[in-house]
Image (cartoon, rainbow, N blue to C red; front, side):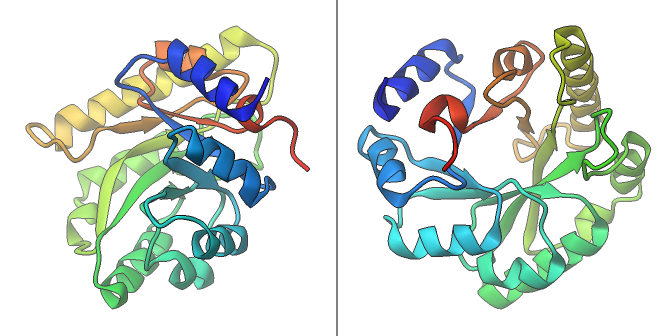
Length: 221
């Protein structure tokens, strides 16, 4: 199967309202261009340096998302061009994104990463921390950040029921936050859940964006 065929197969399985972020980390620019030439435009990277290099070399109509852990001192490198930072895990990071967005003269889309997995090494807000963030109206202070939704990573497990429970919990939380704090607004509308092994479960539990790498590009180099 080619990259283009993989994309077609996945797109055919996804509802029309679910976006596909092709996770291209550790894959070559030629491989990304194969997906690009098949009509795909939304790509995601985990590392700032790799994202910056690929942005510089590849077509400028690509919509780039960052999905990996982001350190505050690296925000400035991607602020001028990144479309969405999906992995915002602290208010301090949001403050830095807002500051760098101001310098770049643009508003940067972000998703709050929520810790839903069993593994302790996963980053993200707890449900209580995220609820407090929205209840206190902290997000309203940022002028160069647009909080577009939430992101979560399920536990690394073969237990599909565990994965479903984690996705369902985040889906319920997302809908509750949207109802309580964004009623009538079309801004807070993204729920990013699901990767190559579990994206269909995520879609069934309300995901609006899935992050798929291996099922598109094959094993990483």
